[in-house]
Length: 118
Image 1 (cartoon, helix red, strand yellow):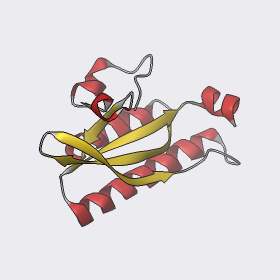
Image 2: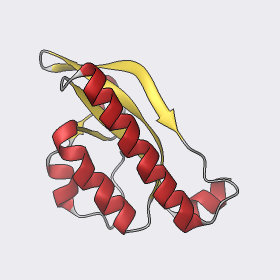
Image 3: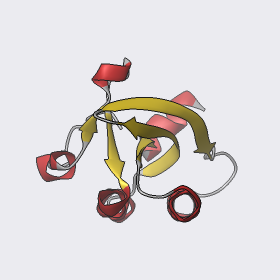
């Protein structure tokens, strides 16, 4: 997730910079991602989708696994809830199947940004 104006610095404290893999943003391990998702949902941010990265020692590599949900055709509040549930379920299933050696990057939007780009 790229840094977004207004989101508290505490959200990023447990984040893992993706700059070493050429991505401007952050990802979080399973134990930290739900605090981020709760904050986003409670502040009306939608999750467009995300990517999964795997740790190999101290390095990260893309798994090329991802999920997405476009905010078209439904009211914003419904989209926020649907994107939260989809993201939460995807991450929980991924963790159950693959374990803890992964982190998750999320792509976030607010209602205005979604309207401008859709």
